[in-house]
Length: 470
Image 1: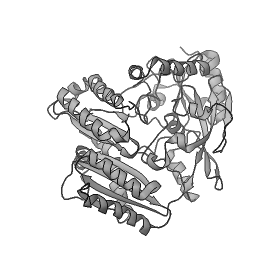
Image 2: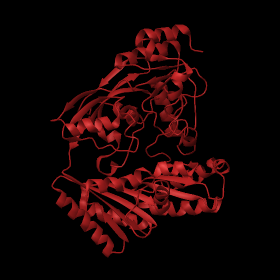
Image 3: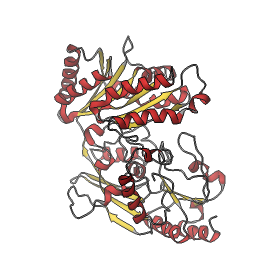
């Protein structure tokens, strides 16, 4: 049990109102976003700045108290909630939400870890710049969580993941020291890349408290189209055409299976594709252009025309206004909500080489239908960077409670298939608790040994987000 002396010391650092111990006060911090798991904690601590984080971490190190860093708690792999032991503290970074600086010449923005992604996007926009990370939870997820999981989102194809968008970090280490690596440099070849070591580590090596992020010029135009296709192979062909015509102007290329779109129509009937007929696959394309809307539209129409002439695309809807573009993106963004409304399902966040996506879908669909006849595939994601959210819903004839008992067997089929194609079982969600044991099936002893050696070196007492990743 955590001692009263430790909690008293925390109150002296943070103030009593930011040391939460009552069950009703802690409850929102203990359950994961999907509501599948509720942990337990000795307290929830809410620091206001980096020095307070450092002081709390030092107290935890001295008292050997485990701590779980938490941002918006929107993760999908149980990475930001404590286990059930009740001896850990949750370190919520939500109060640390300042935009510290914007450098328009260097095209950087320095923000604290608790900053909401959407607020960072808005701050960049007010400065006539673009911060391109975009994902469904952007109204509630935080920059610290985005960095801790190396978030990807819908614009990775053009701008990369958070690892690509970050230039520098401020980190509190496991012994309560502060590493000030807030350097806005695009070239810094002075030793080990500590920045990238902490990005994607899910808070198991140290706590990210601030970051220097890249900004980009605001595009003069963004145009969007939704196309209907027959097969994932056609989607791969369309991607090649779009890249050849648009090059770096292609910023979004999202694949959606027919059932994914049908679920949205079923649970959100106001959302429509604009097509008279349904199609087996859909692709949502977005082109950003620094020249003009007319130039962007001409590029997009050229891609669509070539694809239709080559029988790659069956039909297409090109948005003619910002409202229509948002409506098309809403189809994509509501898939997760529609699947949740449909019932229990098994989620997967896999990546495979882009050249293998169609074959992966075909083979894995076949294996799952053989094992669980009638299961329904909700396949969607960022085809342009090889990341698929390959989710499986129960057959209509099977009760949710029965279906979910087969989760481990379903995971094995999907993960084995992804690895067989040279892929990964986690593309952008991380490992957390949910995939901590699963990853041991797929990483070599050498790779796991290197990861464990890093963990032991930076967190010798195993206090930083214990039970996650390793």
